Image (cartoon, rainbow, N blue to C red):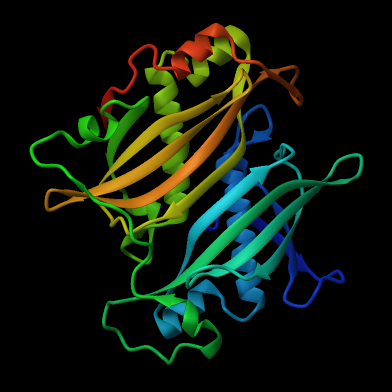
Length: 325
């Protein structure tokens, strides 16, 4: 897992047993438009808070791998953004273990930030799995507290797709209000020497949205130049269904599922790798977008979709064209 947030200091303030609090700042990289922080880097802050919680509990990711051959993986993340972060904000992250389904270790995460008063900015649900490394190197016995959360492979059963002689993107987007994109997974999207990690999928989600909007004729820059509009994300989630390996071609499909009045749209991201003529699902997720107009260098306000945006979301201008890179 890439640590893409700056953990400033870890503190205790009368929290319940097993609950930790950590102060975090967003990374400068995430401040792309004015001083606002994008959804990907908000998720990175959530990830870092969970990693720090595990560290505080005596399970730092580095030592788990080096001593026990356990790969600490964020296998699911579901994040709601209630208040926008700015680059210099200092967030307080509270992480609470909760009962979860399956083998993963589950947490609830809440980020608060100071405005006129301390306000809740983010709520998230996170699942961590400990994937056993299969490189055949000697390891120590796994700590008893983690044993039930160790898995031989990440993901859950998901239906594969037979390709035959079809183009994978054409097959996956056929008859849908969808956009497809294929890209070889680079090493810097991976961790533990082999697999694409959650932060890599967050980057995929961000980029496939960007490519989709450009394909539909409403690119980020076009709307900034013409209308001072920016997309905002109140909700995103991703779950790993399998394992994508370094340098495999990842097929990412972005499907518009619902446009709610003129306020928001929700789309699904599905990721696959092609092995032996079969598309194997590796991740699925959803993201909700609205739009805002820039009022000044610090403030923005939400706007309704105009006819151009509604037409693009409904399948206008280049809809469902496959694209590689």
